[in-house]
Image (cartoon, rainbow, N blue to C red; front, side, top):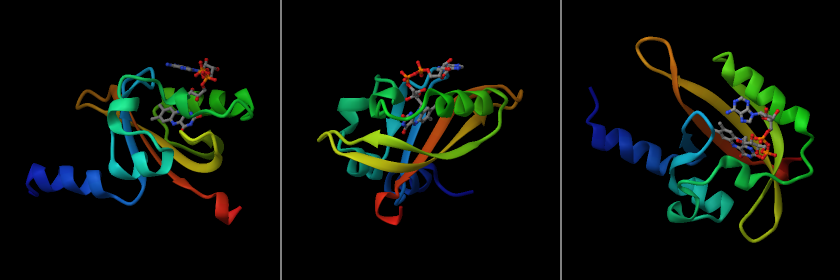
Length: 120
Ligand code: FAD
């Protein structure tokens, strides 16, 4: 087994924005790439909802589909418009997946995204 310090460093340093939330999308953890891509330091976003990143131009159906998927314990992948701390909009390629306990219940969600504005 890998030491947990290495597991932690791997997530901290992974070159993709990673966040872990509770079941209502309140942020519990963000990695360094999340802070880089969104502009928010950990202390500025932990305890807030992922909706803090939302640009109000993404159609509500996108979020409904996301929640429909993850509440059925399926991962969701899609593109939506996020807003950087400095106000700039960027296109996020986002994957959200449920984290399950041994009883098969969802305990948390994990979010992973990249800024794909340049690729669009
Ligand atoms: P909401 O109030 O969130 O409502 C939008 C729709 O989602 C509604 O239909 C509502 O019924 C449904 N919904 C909301 N919460 C729940 C719930 N707890 N259970 C079931 N259905 C629910 N959004 C982004 O814009 N950018 C991101 O990068 C992003 N990353 C996310 C990462 C993770 C791990 C998770 C779990 C969610 C993420 N979201 C992200 C979605 C975010 O939580 C919001 O749902 C979204 O931003 C819309 O916010 P809102 O306030 O406009 O609407």
